[in-house]
Image 1: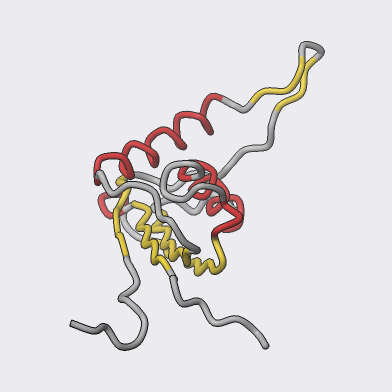
Image 2: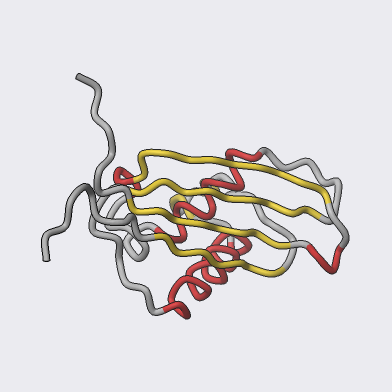
Length: 131
């Protein structure tokens, strides 16, 4: 059997229940810099959701779609929310965030019961290159 054209791109979707979080800036003290506990905990929850899928690491470049469903009107910058997700998955869903070649983000307000973060990762083996 001969395959004509490009192989289908691999896609994986998962959701993380609860209010989306933002990546907090590192704290600097006289003893050095550290990542705030809240950020570490939020990254752990996202990573656990990925690991539960038992999907393994993407081998090629990826495009990531993230939909944030916020229940509170707390001010959160969407880029800091995305940074938390990307950093949590770095080294697990993809080898390095250098492999992320596309990022689509959306922030929506919803009820507390529906608060979540939906993540879709698509491997793009045949990414078009500019000539």
